[in-house]
Image (cartoon, rainbow, N blue to C red; front, top):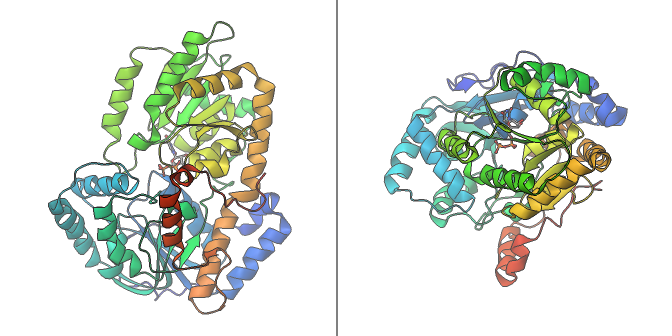
Length: 471
Ligand code: UDP
């Protein structure tokens, strides 16, 4: 039963899902036992509240996941909510700097930006905030300071979706008191944990929703029909192979290197039908940098008719799924990547991924099994792997099939909901044993950092902690 009173009073903007999702509909992917497990967990936390707070309802991976998680949780009777803080363009420019700095990018930031644009906006939002819930999850740095500002009663967890393994010290130190005020923090990989955390830590991987429009598995024919208007608009010949890159335009997404590799590929390629490179990208409302990065990329591409930019397309979700479905391969070679939902989405469409040996990509791209791993700036290697996918379609298909199974076993939405319900069960006192995805030791982050300092090579090593069922 939903408790209507529990969140009453807050005037933050709330996401209103059009519908709820039925867990039974996920049975083809997780089996009857998976459905029963979720129902069992949900029964244990019947009537408990779970609220989420972030800074945008649209664009980017966090919004993507919450858009499915909330309806599925509600379908199971959980009082699940999603609130968004509002901010001016200036606020999002500052939080984008936070994001970049936390992921190790150096750029200037002034105290005025931190204490003016950032904290002023937090205070304005705080005046509207009155959340009472058993579990409150604050996503990413943008709303992090809300934990000590708004009126929030409940167990607050900070969910970090980015790689904060080597954060800029100033910003990390600024955020630390807020994070340490929380009842715990969730990271995608232990390697991402920044120094100085004094709260329980959890490891939870992001997931994709197999029932979401973009993740429906269309036949090639259906995919081509969905893409027909865009193919016509851009004069694309559907007989020619397509390589794609799907993401926001962001410094860490490294689209410039993809373009260079594609140009190199064509210089060296003497036979076979010429491929297209299609960049599909949208803009998140909390990301003000996209335009400049896109314009630079377009200028670098020049008037190349085989390099296409599809930006904020109509019918976005069906187009994303269809393009990933028919592409020979997707290239995602970020220099930093918390997870990269697009990798999971492409693999789920049975399309192999050329991914960089970076962050969450390494959890999804298993070299030579679900795609190929490369160093993010290695133009030659990316071009060579593009050639492999184009020249060996059967092998590419086999990689894609393996990729789909890898995602099914490890990264589908029910698994993510299971983690949140387990946290809800623990934090609402229904169950006293900590979740098994809790990282044992509160000093864990210090150990990781000490080890990395002594053995710098480990800092570059891919995750040694692989999900169960990893190929
Ligand atoms: N996306 C989209 N349309 C686009 C580009 C991206 O719907 O034109 C979606 C993409 O399918 C994925 C999300 O945006 O679900 C991006 O999540 P990811 O974790 O890959 O990156 P983030 O933007 O969070 O860094």
